[in-house]
Length: 141
Ligand SMILES: [Zn+2]
Image (cartoon, rainbow, N blue to C red):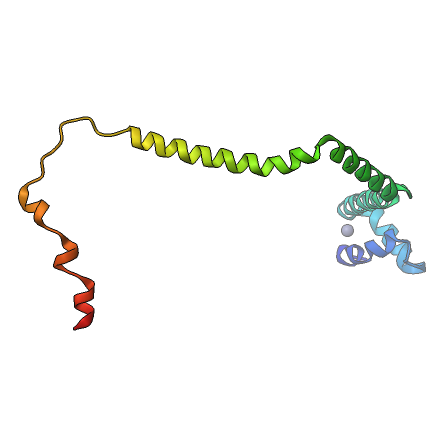
């Protein structure tokens, strides 16, 4: 038996699905080949860990207990938040947002450049783009 065949049959050997001659050959190879023996050891360790994980099953009443806990939490949650608070909460949020906007506008109005007022040249104050290039005039042509 060579290493390749041993590796191929290793899984069946670990699951004890090998019979007779092939099983004896694999066992003989594992005793003489350190590499395959190490591979076999690693795989069987992994197998046993996987089997242990499978053995851990949730308790039968786990779902029941979780649902009970959720119901209790919902009950206490409703008791804690009084009905008028639940109505008041969105109102509070809206009023606080409105207050924030109002304060923002106020601050914006308070701040005005106090420096010297730059006098505009007369030519610029005469220019009114809206009357010079009216869109209505252009669209009628
Ligand atoms: Zn080998």
